[in-house]
Image (cartoon, rainbow, N blue to C red; front, side):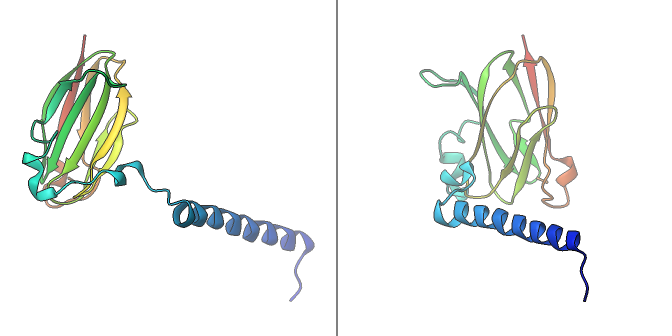
Length: 158
Ligand code: CUA
């Protein structure tokens, strides 16, 4: 089979890139042990209501940390607790969330917050709310018949 010179060059380049990229991913995952940050904190999904901070979902002011507030959410089929919460404008907030049952999504429309909530794990994201308004939280992982009904609201107020 005859192959054009440029075809050979591009084919070699393409396969080379693939090998390099896969090697980087494999070394990072298996040798260096890199994982998503949320994998580091685990929780017993059957005891969420008794486990801090999920025994008190909602917004809490904290002292002596790099963030001003902790915003705690518990997801379950098919709702978030709390369903609505007010956050002061300009506050640096650590969003902490987990799920009681199946995998749910946690996407805050119009922000960079987009987490997967897995049973047994705690997901966290720190952000500053510097734009007032209402933010819709939606579930973006299909979780059952009521998936499309699953939502909550964060209101950023002055
Ligand atoms: Cu919860 Cu989809």
